[in-house]
Image 1 (cartoon, rainbow, N blue to C red):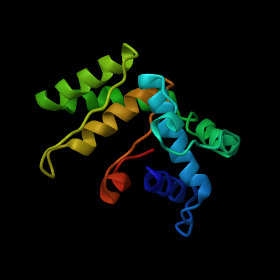
Image 2 (cartoon, helix red, strand yellow):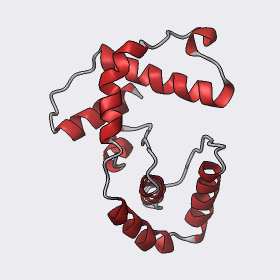
Image 3 (cartoon, rainbow, N blue to C red):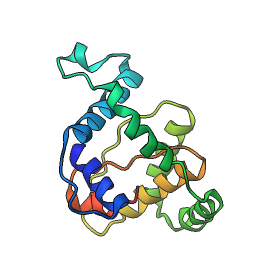
Length: 152
């Protein structure tokens, strides 16, 4: 996750010389702890992991606010254009993810398919739909290539 955050900072700031640092590591810990707390009501320290420095998160909160500044009408148009382009399998995954989001259940989903089958397109549509609804969507990927392709 730290590498994804570093990549996002490099893209957003248009400065590819930004290096991994304690603040980025702390941001990852904050995200992980927030997810753990939402899913199971547990803090990282209780799981034997280092606790994030919440005071350090002020800069992250400013970054989060920047993540809310989208043209929602434009995003909605992108959603209306792209959802009909999903094939039946993509639509099934999209509907499942959106239902979990709408119901407030969240979840963890792993997409495994060969290259060129539309995983990035599907995830872009999901992320755009969430953002079009004035929510925050954070793209996390397990590889550098996927991280480059996912916006936001």
